Length: 315
Image 1 (cartoon, rainbow, N blue to C red):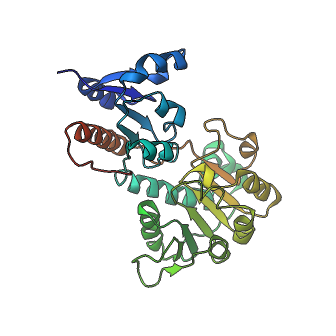
Image 2 (image 1 turned 30 degrees about the horizontal axis):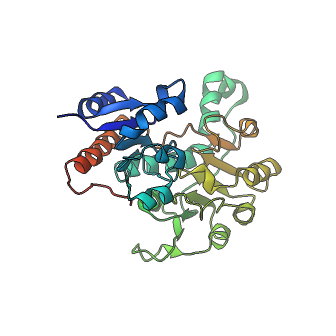
Image 3 (image 1 turned 90 degrees about the vertical axis):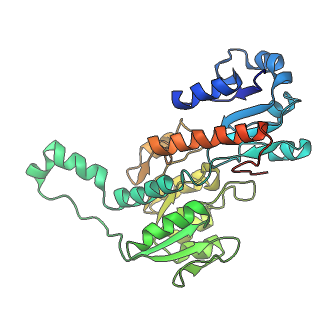
């Protein structure tokens, strides 16, 4: 029995690549020197696409695969997949939620702590001899007991809020509607109003055309010169120009970011700002989570071709 033809948009670790190639006839789009010619050659045979959240699948890619039935995303975000093109043709889309929730939440809170307490510079202080030569490290700010806002109380947002509650922080959140949460978590639907009430604003909502630049100049101004923005969602949710302007002028005290427009090529303005804590989009970057993501991606593919319910269907 022949194996289904699958278009692979980006590289996976060997622990995913080997079983993927055992089950499917894999065509590595990302390795093709002439991608249009490669797609013209293999596209008519493709029945599924395996991709990553940041790579997605464009309308052009989808159109080049007339037999396409399923797009399986390695990642929780699927905003880079042209969902309108999928709906028009009845193509199903899956992602890998839940398995990465807690690791992303861990990193979000760790970034808040590291930036607020100046931990990277303090480590340099201890290693460089400044501790001996200059004395104690300059005083930083506390985290516990302060006010935190979570913009988007989905799986990751809820996990972040639970962790923040452990620091006795006052929790407020913004979502499309009220959630079943502890009674002392305040619901503030408007992002500007939420930012006005908190010291730390965590961006954890799913990205879409509607949420593009939802954290805009008005939200950043409301967060204010003592505020800190933490983004572990998608870069498109934050207006980077407005954020950089605010950091450079002191209108915002600090930011901690795991996602960037045009990544991995960062806007060079970020690199000149010590008040910006920068991470290389590795919220899900643990062995355990990446293995779980790969397993769920393959489970969705296998279930589809076996005619079984998909474990994590998006559309």
